[in-house]
Amino acid sequence: MDQETDDVLDGVGTRLRTLRRERGLTLADLAATTGVSESTLSRLESGQRRATLELLLPLARTYDVPLDDLVGAPRTGDPRIHLKPVQRFGMIFIPLSRRPGGVHAFKMIIPAVPEPLEPTPQTHDGFEWLYVLSGRLRLVLGERDLTLPAGEAAEFDTSLPHWLGSADGGAVELLILFGLQGERAHVRAHPHERR
Image 1 (cartoon, one colour):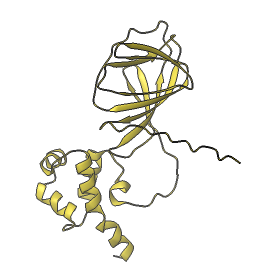
Image 2 (tube, helix red, strand yellow):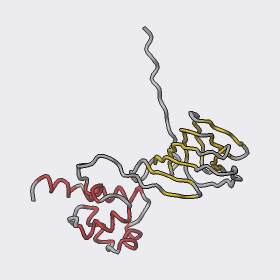
Image 3 (cartoon, rainbow, N blue to C red):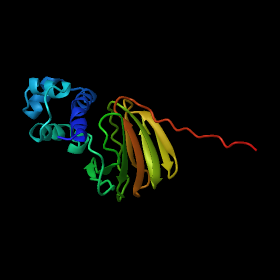
Image 4 (cartoon, rainbow, N blue to C red):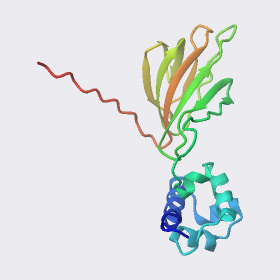
C-alpha cells in the first residue's frame, strides 16, 4: 500500500469513535445493530485492526453516512448534493446538511390546504431557529399564537409546546436550523465602517 492509503486508513478509527460518541452509543449498542463484535469494533476504533469493506458497510448503514465519510476520502466528481425529501406530519422536509450531530439545516414546505388546520402542539428536545421564505406561517408556541410573513424569523426551545402551519391555507416555505442538544443559532453582523 502507498503512504496516502495508509494515512487514510489510519484515520478511520478516530472517525468511528467520534461518530459513535456523537450518537451516544456504546460498543455493545453498535455490536447489536451491526452484527460486528464489540472486540472488533474496539480494535477498529483504536487502530489495532485495519478497516475492511465488510466491516465499514454495516457501520455506514448504522450511522447513515456515506462510506467516503468513514474513510475521510476526498470529495470528487459531482459536487452537487442530491437531496432526498422526507414527508412527515403532512409537511415536506428537505435536509440541507448531512453532518452527524450538531445543528441540522432543513428546508420545510407546508403544502397549501383548503382550510387552515387546527393546531396540535408537540414537544421534543432541542432548539429551533426558523426563517420564512414565502407564505404566511402560523407559529403556536405555548400560549402565543403568531403569524410570521416572508422575511421574518423566530427561535425557540422545542421543549415548549409548539406547532407550525399555514396562517391562511396557502403554501409556506421556510428554512429551519435544529439542534438536538439545544444549540442556538447565532447571527452576527459586522457594522459598516464609518468614513
